Length: 431
Ligand code: UGA
Image (tube, rainbow, N blue to C red; front, side, top):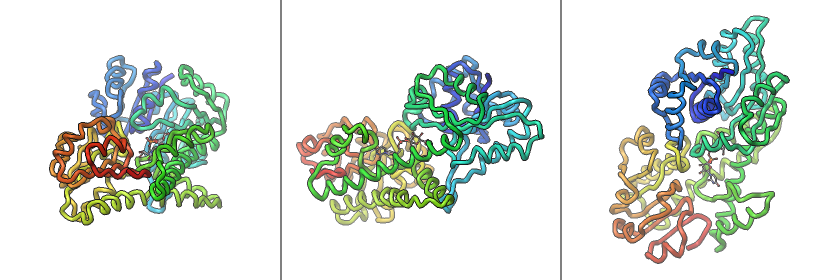
């Protein structure tokens, strides 16, 4: 079976390389020619643990090929995964124009039975639209199925997640499509849930919206902990032992970011509204998440009084560790706020500085986690990279003008930091 993957972002590229590794011949296509050129030359366009090595391996073994031409990709493939972006329109609705564009291209190049699989996160009933579009733009005898097979990988552990998923959701309308998808995932050991396409689409959006809700919920509890002298980390632990709740995604901090949660929460609310379902719970989730930035700025001001001309050192720019992705990252909002307040910003991130420089060419960047601290009035921890968790506090103190740490990700132990006489302001704990 030959697999075509259209759209080579985090999801597309990981999917393509995973199937290549599983032994299928894969053809990748993307409309971004620079990206394709890089991929052909074995240069991974994103940072994601293990992806670079796997790309080289699969190219060497000729298991993957990158094609400039979408028509050729469609014609040569038996199964086509649609992995293009589904960004948000200004009114919060998902912009599905790229999905439509690919559907039209598929229609125009159908040369025998194809299984078309939507992998991108899309609103419920998108598969029906893909089907209709293909019918509208192809000839009457077109032979195809459309399936939904949402992806649940997390950036930063994308490869691990695709090889070890919690579940594989297969949304199909025919036995043939079901058999093909089950065959593709034969070697992956995970529960496989076969459902109808609408159900599969909702599973994906509901999962992301629920996880975002969990984060906003714990962030509110964190605020209450802070006011009352309780410890959010222990509260999360205590709640997490309850199997119905679970400990994961109960880390309070500066809120969720990234390409997925913010857009999916908005999209799911919008889909509800379109269908007469009032999901205003999700508006509150978003509101709470946005207010996390205010909380951090407030903490800085409580410690430093005015921010004007104060040097703020930032640890971490990516929206989460182990990625260079800064899309909808809290760091972007925080740096904008600091600059508006007249602060001097110096940042360090192990992988995301190049991307950040494109947005903020005029702030200072440091070569490591210590250099950034030189003469800083405060350190603000925005992303919980592992390298920030083990540090030389003595050295940090010597470098900083004021020993003040605002910890947006709760990475340090109060006693430890206090030993070195830092003023330490974490989230949801009083130290
Ligand atoms: C998320 C989902 O977790 C994946 O299952 C899904 O496939 C993906 O979206 C997608 O739809 O493509 P991702 O955005 O890559 O994955 O990363 P997460 O690990 O979910 O983190 C999202 C944000 O939530 C980050 O900003 C992270 O810092 C924040 N977060 C996460 C918290 O603030 N607290 C937590 O306890 C967990």
